[in-house]
Amino acid sequence: MLLVKNIAKIVGVDESGRLRVEGSAMNTLGEIDNAWLLVENDRIAAYGTMDKMPEVAPGTEIVDAEGGMLFPSFCDSHTHLVYAGSREQEFIDKINGLSYEEIAKRGGGILNSADRLHETSEDELYEQAMERIREIISMGTGCVEIKSGYGLTVEDELKMLRVIRRIKETSPITVKATFLGAHAVGRAYKGRQGEYVDLIIREMIPAVAKENLAEFIDVFCDEGFFTVEETERMMQAAAKYGIVPKIHANEMAVSGGVQVGVRNNALSVDHLERMGAEEIKVLAGSRTMPTMLPGAAFFLELPFPPARQMIEAGLGVALASDFNPGSSPSGNMKFVLSLACIKMRMTPAEAINAATLNSAYAMGLSKEYGSITVGKKANFFLTSRIPSIEYIPYAYTSPLVRRVFLQGREVKC
Ligand code: NIG
Ligand code: FE
Image (cartoon, rainbow, N blue to C red; front, side, top):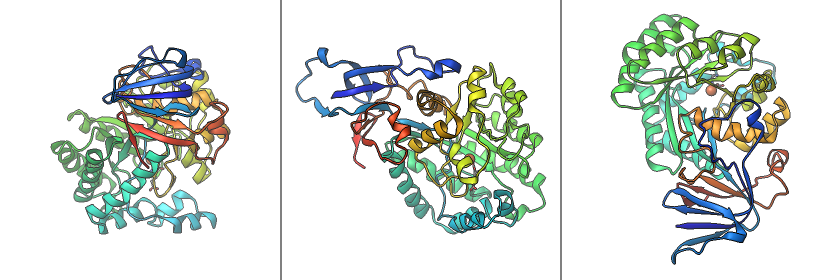
Protein backbone atom coordinates (compact mmCIF):
# COMPACT_ATOMS: atom_id res chain seq x y z
CA MET A 1 0.00 0.00 0.00
CA LEU A 2 1.05 3.55 -0.68
CA LEU A 3 -0.43 6.74 0.72
CA VAL A 4 0.19 10.13 -0.87
CA LYS A 5 -0.49 12.99 1.54
CA ASN A 6 -0.41 16.79 1.51
CA ILE A 7 -1.64 17.06 -2.07
CA ALA A 8 -2.68 20.67 -2.78
CA LYS A 9 -5.18 19.47 -5.38
CA ILE A 10 -6.08 16.18 -7.02
CA VAL A 11 -6.93 16.98 -10.64
CA GLY A 12 -8.94 14.84 -13.05
CA VAL A 13 -11.13 13.09 -10.50
CA ASP A 14 -13.98 11.23 -12.19
CA GLU A 15 -16.60 9.24 -10.36
CA SER A 16 -18.97 8.76 -13.28
CA GLY A 17 -17.03 5.97 -14.97
CA ARG A 18 -17.52 7.59 -18.38
CA LEU A 19 -15.17 6.46 -21.11
CA ARG A 20 -14.77 9.87 -22.79
CA VAL A 21 -15.81 13.46 -22.24
CA GLU A 22 -17.50 15.54 -24.93
CA GLY A 23 -18.48 19.08 -25.88
CA SER A 24 -19.02 21.63 -23.10
CA ALA A 25 -18.35 18.97 -20.42
CA MET A 26 -14.70 19.05 -21.53
CA ASN A 27 -14.33 22.38 -19.76
CA THR A 28 -14.81 20.82 -16.32
CA LEU A 29 -12.21 18.85 -14.38
CA GLY A 30 -12.98 16.97 -11.18
CA GLU A 31 -10.87 18.45 -8.35
CA ILE A 32 -10.31 17.79 -4.65
CA ASP A 33 -8.38 20.34 -2.58
CA ASN A 34 -5.99 19.53 0.23
CA ALA A 35 -6.12 15.78 -0.24
CA TRP A 36 -4.64 12.32 0.23
CA LEU A 37 -4.76 9.35 -2.12
CA LEU A 38 -4.35 5.67 -1.27
CA VAL A 39 -2.97 3.04 -3.67
CA GLU A 40 -3.44 -0.70 -3.17
CA ASN A 41 -1.26 -2.89 -5.35
CA ASP A 42 -1.41 -1.17 -8.74
CA ARG A 43 -4.78 0.53 -8.35
CA ILE A 44 -6.29 3.66 -6.85
CA ALA A 45 -8.08 2.49 -3.69
CA ALA A 46 -9.43 5.72 -2.16
CA TYR A 47 -8.91 9.45 -1.79
CA GLY A 48 -10.25 12.22 0.37
CA THR A 49 -9.45 15.46 2.16
CA MET A 50 -6.60 15.82 4.66
CA ASP A 51 -8.95 16.48 7.58
CA LYS A 52 -10.21 12.91 7.16
CA MET A 53 -7.04 11.03 6.41
CA PRO A 54 -7.38 7.35 7.33
CA GLU A 55 -5.10 5.39 9.64
CA VAL A 56 -3.01 3.19 7.42
CA ALA A 57 -1.71 -0.30 8.01
CA PRO A 58 1.85 -0.62 9.27
CA GLY A 59 4.29 -0.96 6.41
CA THR A 60 2.37 1.41 4.16
CA GLU A 61 4.72 3.59 2.15
CA ILE A 62 3.99 7.27 2.78
CA VAL A 63 4.73 9.83 0.07
CA ASP A 64 4.59 13.51 0.97
CA ALA A 65 3.40 15.57 -2.01
CA GLU A 66 4.64 18.68 -0.17
CA GLY A 67 1.85 20.84 -1.50
CA GLY A 68 2.22 19.86 -5.14
CA MET A 69 -0.76 18.78 -7.26
CA LEU A 70 -1.59 15.25 -8.39
CA PHE A 71 -2.60 14.68 -12.02
CA PRO A 72 -3.57 11.50 -13.89
CA SER A 73 -0.65 10.56 -16.14
CA PHE A 74 -0.84 11.85 -19.67
CA CYS A 75 -2.03 9.40 -22.30
CA ASP A 76 -0.33 9.84 -25.66
CA SER A 77 -2.45 8.05 -28.24
CA HIS A 78 -0.35 8.76 -31.34
CA THR A 79 3.42 8.37 -31.61
CA HIS A 80 6.06 6.98 -33.93
CA LEU A 81 8.74 6.85 -31.28
CA VAL A 82 10.51 3.74 -32.52
CA TYR A 83 12.88 5.14 -35.15
CA ALA A 84 16.56 5.07 -35.97
CA GLY A 85 18.67 8.19 -35.67
CA SER A 86 17.17 11.60 -36.38
CA ARG A 87 16.46 13.92 -39.31
CA GLU A 88 17.79 17.35 -38.43
CA GLN A 89 19.13 17.78 -41.98
CA GLU A 90 15.50 18.02 -43.13
CA PHE A 91 14.93 20.55 -40.39
CA ILE A 92 17.56 22.68 -42.12
CA ASP A 93 15.94 22.00 -45.52
CA LYS A 94 12.68 23.29 -44.08
CA ILE A 95 14.36 26.40 -42.73
CA ASN A 96 15.68 26.93 -46.25
CA GLY A 97 12.17 26.80 -47.65
CA LEU A 98 11.31 23.22 -48.62
CA SER A 99 7.91 21.87 -47.56
CA TYR A 100 7.26 18.49 -45.90
CA GLU A 101 5.79 17.19 -49.19
CA GLU A 102 8.78 18.43 -51.23
CA ILE A 103 11.20 16.71 -48.86
CA ALA A 104 9.18 13.49 -49.11
CA LYS A 105 9.10 13.68 -52.92
CA ARG A 106 12.90 13.94 -53.01
CA GLY A 107 13.12 10.60 -51.21
CA GLY A 108 13.63 12.15 -47.80
CA GLY A 109 11.11 12.06 -45.00
CA ILE A 110 9.63 8.71 -44.10
CA LEU A 111 11.81 6.85 -46.66
CA ASN A 112 14.92 8.38 -45.15
CA SER A 113 13.90 6.96 -41.75
CA ALA A 114 13.10 3.61 -43.40
CA ASP A 115 16.64 3.40 -44.84
CA ARG A 116 18.16 4.08 -41.43
CA LEU A 117 15.88 1.64 -39.70
CA HIS A 118 16.81 -1.08 -42.17
CA GLU A 119 20.49 -0.66 -41.25
CA THR A 120 19.86 -0.64 -37.50
CA SER A 121 19.75 -3.83 -35.43
CA GLU A 122 16.70 -4.70 -33.36
CA ASP A 123 18.71 -4.27 -30.14
CA GLU A 124 20.00 -0.86 -31.12
CA LEU A 125 16.51 0.24 -32.18
CA TYR A 126 15.18 -0.88 -28.82
CA GLU A 127 17.89 1.05 -26.95
CA GLN A 128 17.20 4.23 -28.89
CA ALA A 129 13.45 3.93 -28.36
CA MET A 130 13.88 3.23 -24.63
CA GLU A 131 15.75 6.49 -24.23
CA ARG A 132 12.69 8.26 -25.60
CA ILE A 133 10.41 6.16 -23.40
CA ARG A 134 12.37 7.16 -20.29
CA GLU A 135 12.17 10.77 -21.36
CA ILE A 136 8.38 10.77 -21.85
CA ILE A 137 7.84 8.93 -18.56
CA SER A 138 9.82 11.65 -16.79
CA MET A 139 7.56 14.25 -18.45
CA GLY A 140 4.38 12.61 -17.14
CA THR A 141 3.23 10.15 -19.82
CA GLY A 142 1.86 6.84 -18.53
CA CYS A 143 0.23 5.25 -21.60
CA VAL A 144 1.52 5.48 -25.13
CA GLU A 145 0.53 4.20 -28.55
CA ILE A 146 3.47 3.42 -30.84
CA LYS A 147 3.24 2.84 -34.59
CA SER A 148 5.37 0.89 -37.01
CA GLY A 149 5.72 2.49 -40.45
CA TYR A 150 9.47 3.01 -40.91
CA GLY A 151 9.95 -0.57 -42.06
CA LEU A 152 7.89 -0.65 -45.26
CA THR A 153 8.99 -4.22 -46.01
CA VAL A 154 7.51 -7.34 -44.40
CA GLU A 155 10.69 -8.03 -42.39
CA ASP A 156 11.32 -4.48 -41.25
CA GLU A 157 7.70 -3.82 -40.26
CA LEU A 158 7.82 -6.97 -38.12
CA LYS A 159 11.15 -5.86 -36.68
CA MET A 160 9.62 -2.56 -35.57
CA LEU A 161 6.60 -4.25 -34.06
CA ARG A 162 8.81 -6.68 -32.15
CA VAL A 163 10.70 -3.72 -30.71
CA ILE A 164 7.38 -2.21 -29.63
CA ARG A 165 6.44 -5.52 -28.01
CA ARG A 166 9.75 -5.59 -26.15
CA ILE A 167 9.12 -2.06 -24.83
CA LYS A 168 5.70 -3.24 -23.67
CA GLU A 169 7.27 -6.15 -21.82
CA THR A 170 10.12 -4.25 -20.19
CA SER A 171 8.82 -0.77 -19.32
CA PRO A 172 6.29 0.29 -16.68
CA ILE A 173 4.60 2.48 -19.31
CA THR A 174 1.44 0.98 -20.87
CA VAL A 175 1.93 0.44 -24.61
CA LYS A 176 -0.50 -0.10 -27.48
CA ALA A 177 0.93 -1.15 -30.85
CA THR A 178 -0.26 0.00 -34.26
CA PHE A 179 0.69 -1.46 -37.64
CA LEU A 180 1.36 1.39 -40.09
CA GLY A 181 2.75 -0.39 -43.15
CA ALA A 182 0.82 2.17 -45.21
CA HIS A 183 2.90 5.12 -44.01
CA ALA A 184 4.60 5.53 -47.41
CA VAL A 185 5.25 3.27 -50.41
CA GLY A 186 8.41 1.22 -49.76
CA ARG A 187 11.38 2.09 -52.02
CA ALA A 188 11.28 -1.24 -53.85
CA TYR A 189 7.69 -0.46 -54.92
CA LYS A 190 8.33 3.07 -56.25
CA GLY A 191 5.72 3.82 -58.91
CA ARG A 192 3.81 0.65 -58.01
CA GLN A 193 1.64 1.84 -55.14
CA GLY A 194 -1.17 -0.62 -55.94
CA GLU A 195 1.21 -3.56 -55.64
CA TYR A 196 2.53 -2.24 -52.35
CA VAL A 197 -1.05 -2.07 -51.02
CA ASP A 198 -1.52 -5.67 -52.17
CA LEU A 199 1.65 -6.64 -50.28
CA ILE A 200 0.23 -5.06 -47.13
CA ILE A 201 -3.05 -6.92 -47.54
CA ARG A 202 -1.66 -10.30 -48.60
CA GLU A 203 1.49 -10.53 -46.51
CA MET A 204 1.97 -7.86 -43.91
CA ILE A 205 -1.44 -7.90 -42.21
CA PRO A 206 -1.58 -11.72 -41.93
CA ALA A 207 2.01 -11.81 -40.59
CA VAL A 208 1.26 -9.11 -38.00
CA ALA A 209 -1.91 -10.93 -36.95
CA LYS A 210 -0.15 -14.29 -36.73
CA GLU A 211 2.34 -12.99 -34.18
CA ASN A 212 -0.34 -10.87 -32.52
CA LEU A 213 1.90 -7.83 -32.85
CA ALA A 214 -0.65 -5.01 -33.20
CA GLU A 215 -4.09 -4.13 -31.90
CA PHE A 216 -4.55 -1.28 -34.38
CA ILE A 217 -3.95 -0.54 -38.06
CA ASP A 218 -3.17 2.93 -39.33
CA VAL A 219 -3.01 4.32 -42.87
CA PHE A 220 -1.60 7.69 -43.96
CA CYS A 221 -4.73 8.58 -45.90
CA ASP A 222 -3.85 11.87 -47.54
CA GLU A 223 -2.98 13.69 -50.72
CA GLY A 224 0.33 12.32 -52.01
CA PHE A 225 0.11 9.21 -49.81
CA PHE A 226 -2.75 6.62 -49.78
CA THR A 227 -6.20 7.07 -51.30
CA VAL A 228 -9.55 6.63 -49.59
CA GLU A 229 -10.18 3.43 -51.57
CA GLU A 230 -6.81 1.94 -50.63
CA THR A 231 -7.37 2.92 -47.02
CA GLU A 232 -10.73 1.20 -46.98
CA ARG A 233 -9.34 -2.01 -48.49
CA MET A 234 -6.57 -2.19 -45.91
CA MET A 235 -8.90 -1.49 -42.99
CA GLN A 236 -11.27 -4.18 -44.15
CA ALA A 237 -8.46 -6.70 -44.53
CA ALA A 238 -7.30 -5.95 -40.98
CA ALA A 239 -10.85 -6.11 -39.59
CA LYS A 240 -10.93 -9.82 -40.45
CA TYR A 241 -8.29 -10.30 -37.75
CA GLY A 242 -10.00 -7.99 -35.26
CA ILE A 243 -7.43 -5.24 -35.84
CA VAL A 244 -9.11 -1.85 -35.32
CA PRO A 245 -8.36 1.25 -37.44
CA LYS A 246 -6.82 4.54 -36.28
CA ILE A 247 -6.26 6.76 -39.31
CA HIS A 248 -3.87 9.60 -40.25
CA ALA A 249 -6.35 11.93 -41.93
CA ASN A 250 -6.59 15.45 -43.32
CA GLU A 251 -3.06 16.61 -42.59
CA MET A 252 -2.20 17.69 -46.13
CA ALA A 253 -5.68 18.09 -47.64
CA VAL A 254 -9.41 17.60 -47.02
CA SER A 255 -8.79 14.05 -48.12
CA GLY A 256 -11.89 12.05 -47.22
CA GLY A 257 -9.87 10.39 -44.48
CA VAL A 258 -12.29 11.38 -41.74
CA GLN A 259 -15.28 9.95 -43.58
CA VAL A 260 -13.62 6.67 -44.45
CA GLY A 261 -12.41 6.31 -40.87
CA VAL A 262 -15.83 6.91 -39.36
CA ARG A 263 -17.46 4.60 -41.91
CA ASN A 264 -15.13 1.80 -40.85
CA ASN A 265 -15.59 2.38 -37.14
CA ALA A 266 -12.11 3.77 -36.58
CA LEU A 267 -11.27 4.32 -32.94
CA SER A 268 -9.69 7.63 -33.88
CA VAL A 269 -8.91 9.89 -36.83
CA ASP A 270 -5.77 11.89 -36.24
CA HIS A 271 -4.12 15.15 -37.41
CA LEU A 272 -7.14 17.06 -38.81
CA GLU A 273 -5.29 20.20 -39.85
CA ARG A 274 -7.66 20.47 -42.86
CA MET A 275 -11.27 20.14 -41.78
CA GLY A 276 -14.54 21.28 -43.32
CA ALA A 277 -18.01 21.50 -41.78
CA GLU A 278 -18.85 18.12 -43.34
CA GLU A 279 -15.98 16.39 -41.47
CA ILE A 280 -17.22 17.73 -38.13
CA LYS A 281 -20.76 16.63 -38.90
CA VAL A 282 -19.69 13.11 -39.78
CA LEU A 283 -17.86 12.71 -36.47
CA ALA A 284 -20.89 13.66 -34.38
CA GLY A 285 -22.52 10.61 -32.83
CA SER A 286 -19.74 8.26 -33.98
CA ARG A 287 -17.42 6.23 -31.80
CA THR A 288 -14.41 7.81 -33.54
CA MET A 289 -12.27 10.18 -31.45
CA PRO A 290 -10.90 13.17 -33.38
CA THR A 291 -7.29 13.51 -32.26
CA MET A 292 -5.19 16.59 -32.74
CA LEU A 293 -1.40 16.70 -32.87
CA PRO A 294 -0.52 20.36 -32.45
CA GLY A 295 3.21 19.55 -32.19
CA ALA A 296 3.17 18.57 -35.87
CA ALA A 297 1.24 21.69 -36.94
CA PHE A 298 3.72 23.78 -34.92
CA PHE A 299 6.84 22.09 -36.30
CA LEU A 300 5.66 22.05 -39.95
CA GLU A 301 3.88 25.41 -39.74
CA LEU A 302 0.57 23.93 -40.85
CA PRO A 303 -2.77 25.46 -39.94
CA PHE A 304 -3.94 24.23 -36.54
CA PRO A 305 -7.02 21.98 -36.33
CA PRO A 306 -10.30 23.78 -35.57
CA ALA A 307 -10.53 22.57 -31.99
CA ARG A 308 -13.05 25.23 -30.90
CA GLN A 309 -15.47 24.37 -33.69
CA MET A 310 -15.24 20.68 -32.89
CA ILE A 311 -15.85 21.15 -29.16
CA GLU A 312 -18.63 23.65 -29.80
CA ALA A 313 -20.25 21.10 -32.13
CA GLY A 314 -20.40 18.79 -29.12
CA LEU A 315 -17.48 16.52 -30.00
CA GLY A 316 -14.95 15.12 -27.59
CA VAL A 317 -11.41 15.65 -28.82
CA ALA A 318 -8.07 14.09 -27.87
CA LEU A 319 -4.53 15.43 -27.94
CA ALA A 320 -1.36 13.48 -28.68
CA SER A 321 2.28 14.28 -29.42
CA ASP A 322 2.89 12.52 -32.78
CA PHE A 323 6.48 12.01 -31.47
CA ASN A 324 8.43 11.22 -34.68
CA PRO A 325 11.66 12.30 -36.39
CA GLY A 326 10.05 14.23 -39.26
CA SER A 327 7.11 16.31 -38.14
CA SER A 328 7.26 16.36 -34.34
CA PRO A 329 10.53 15.38 -32.68
CA SER A 330 9.09 15.77 -29.18
CA GLY A 331 6.95 13.65 -26.89
CA ASN A 332 6.39 16.41 -24.35
CA MET A 333 2.66 16.27 -23.55
CA LYS A 334 2.88 19.32 -21.30
CA PHE A 335 4.06 21.34 -24.30
CA VAL A 336 1.20 19.81 -26.32
CA LEU A 337 -1.19 21.25 -23.70
CA SER A 338 0.42 24.67 -24.10
CA LEU A 339 0.11 24.53 -27.89
CA ALA A 340 -3.53 23.46 -27.60
CA CYS A 341 -4.26 26.47 -25.39
CA ILE A 342 -2.14 29.03 -27.23
CA LYS A 343 -2.73 27.97 -30.84
CA MET A 344 -6.18 26.34 -30.74
CA ARG A 345 -7.76 28.36 -27.92
CA MET A 346 -8.61 25.30 -25.89
CA THR A 347 -9.01 26.03 -22.19
CA PRO A 348 -6.53 24.33 -19.84
CA ALA A 349 -9.34 22.07 -18.55
CA GLU A 350 -10.31 21.05 -22.09
CA ALA A 351 -6.69 20.39 -22.98
CA ILE A 352 -6.11 18.26 -19.86
CA ASN A 353 -9.26 16.21 -20.50
CA ALA A 354 -8.13 15.77 -24.11
CA ALA A 355 -4.65 14.59 -23.06
CA THR A 356 -5.87 12.19 -20.38
CA LEU A 357 -9.31 10.54 -20.54
CA ASN A 358 -9.98 11.19 -24.24
CA SER A 359 -6.51 10.17 -25.30
CA ALA A 360 -6.89 6.99 -23.23
CA TYR A 361 -10.19 6.40 -25.08
CA ALA A 362 -8.35 6.79 -28.40
CA MET A 363 -6.20 3.78 -27.42
CA GLY A 364 -9.08 1.74 -25.98
CA LEU A 365 -7.69 2.27 -22.48
CA SER A 366 -10.10 4.64 -20.77
CA LYS A 367 -11.73 1.95 -18.64
CA GLU A 368 -8.43 1.57 -16.78
CA TYR A 369 -6.60 4.86 -17.30
CA GLY A 370 -7.05 8.57 -17.95
CA SER A 371 -8.63 9.81 -14.72
CA ILE A 372 -8.34 9.59 -10.95
CA THR A 373 -11.03 7.03 -10.23
CA VAL A 374 -11.23 4.35 -7.55
CA GLY A 375 -10.41 1.02 -9.21
CA LYS A 376 -8.43 2.48 -12.10
CA LYS A 377 -4.70 1.86 -12.46
CA ALA A 378 -2.60 4.10 -10.24
CA ASN A 379 -0.87 6.14 -12.96
CA PHE A 380 -0.28 9.71 -11.83
CA PHE A 381 2.35 12.39 -11.33
CA LEU A 382 3.04 14.95 -8.64
CA THR A 383 3.94 18.50 -9.60
CA SER A 384 6.10 21.12 -8.00
CA ARG A 385 4.16 23.63 -5.90
CA ILE A 386 2.12 25.55 -8.47
CA PRO A 387 -0.48 28.29 -7.96
CA SER A 388 -3.21 26.79 -10.18
CA ILE A 389 -4.04 24.07 -12.71
CA GLU A 390 -3.77 26.68 -15.45
CA TYR A 391 -0.15 27.27 -14.50
CA ILE A 392 0.75 23.93 -16.15
CA PRO A 393 0.16 25.00 -19.80
CA TYR A 394 0.96 28.65 -18.98
CA ALA A 395 4.53 28.02 -17.77
CA TYR A 396 5.24 26.36 -21.07
CA THR A 397 8.88 25.44 -20.61
CA SER A 398 9.04 24.81 -16.87
CA PRO A 399 9.46 21.11 -16.10
CA LEU A 400 6.79 20.98 -13.39
CA VAL A 401 6.39 17.18 -13.27
CA ARG A 402 8.31 16.25 -10.11
CA ARG A 403 7.55 12.62 -9.24
CA VAL A 404 6.00 9.93 -11.42
CA PHE A 405 4.00 6.84 -10.33
CA LEU A 406 3.02 4.09 -12.78
CA GLN A 407 1.07 0.96 -11.83
CA GLY A 408 1.19 2.19 -8.22
CA ARG A 409 4.99 2.45 -8.01
CA GLU A 410 7.30 5.39 -8.21
CA VAL A 411 9.41 5.45 -11.35
CA LYS A 412 12.74 7.11 -10.66
CA CYS A 413 13.64 9.16 -13.70
O1 NIG B 1 2.23 11.83 -38.25
N1 NIG B 1 1.95 12.17 -41.28
C1 NIG B 1 2.57 11.11 -41.34
N2 NIG B 1 3.47 10.62 -40.53
C2 NIG B 1 4.11 11.33 -39.50
C3 NIG B 1 5.40 11.89 -39.94
C4 NIG B 1 6.38 10.86 -40.12
C5 NIG B 1 7.73 11.32 -40.56
O2 NIG B 1 7.87 12.39 -41.18
O3 NIG B 1 8.65 10.58 -40.27
C6 NIG B 1 3.16 12.31 -38.87
O4 NIG B 1 3.32 13.52 -38.99
FE1 FE C 1 1.66 10.52 -37.06
